[in-house]
Image (cartoon, rainbow, N blue to C red; front, top):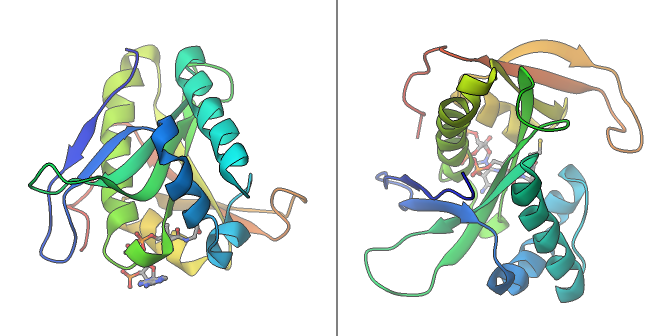
Length: 195
Ligand SMILES: CC(C)(COP(=O)(O)OP(=O)(O)OC[C@H]1O[C@@H](n2cnc3c(N)ncnc32)[C@H](O)[C@@H]1OP(=O)(O)O)[C@@H](O)C(=O)NCCC(=O)NCCS
C-alpha cells in the first residue's frame, strides 16, 4: 500500500469528507489552521509559516514512505469540482513500523469546522482503515492520548468507541499536564458515530 483515500458520507449537520495524504498545495491552509490558539495549545509541532508547513508536509510524506506514520488531510468533498477545503487532520502512528500490536491515533479540526462531527467521523474512518490495513500484521490495539483537561478531545474518543483505559502522569514538555489514555481494541464493535 502506498497511499489511501477514504470517503465519509455527509450528515445532516456535516459535509461529506475525503481523507487523503497531505500534499504541497495544502501549505497555505495548514498555516491558516495553525493561527488558532486552541490548535497550538493542544498539539505538538506548531506550524508558523509556509516554509514550516512545507517541512511538516514533507515529514508526513516520509512517514508514508517509511510506513511508520500515516497522516491524512481531512477535506470537504463537495458534489461539484470546486476547490477542496482543508477541515482537519488524522494520523495513525507506529512507534517504529507496522508489525507492532499497538499504534497511536491523533487528530485536529480547523477552528471554523469544529462542532460538526468532523474529527469523530474522520477518526472512525481512520480506525476502520487501520485495522483493515494492519490487522493482518498483528495490530490489535489503537491508543488515543489527550490532556485530561481537553474535554472536546475526550468527547471525540468516546464517540469513536475509544474507552478510557488509564490516566497518564504528566511528562513535560510534550505532556505538561496529566492525560488520558483511551483504547480501541481490534474487533470491538462501535455504534455509529453520534452527530
Ligand atoms: C478536539 C477536536 C479535534 C474536536 O473536533 P470536532 O471536529 O469539533 O469534533 P466534534 O464536532 O465531535 O466536537 C467535539 C466536542 O467539541 C466541543 N465543541 C462543539 N462545538 C465546538 C466549537 N465550535 N469549538 C470548539 N469545541 C466545540 C463539544 O464539546 C463537542 O462535544 P459534543 O458533540 O458532545 O457537544 C477539536 O476541538 C480540535 O481540533 N481541538 C484542538 C486540537 C486538539 O485538541 N486536538 C486533539 C489533541 S489530543
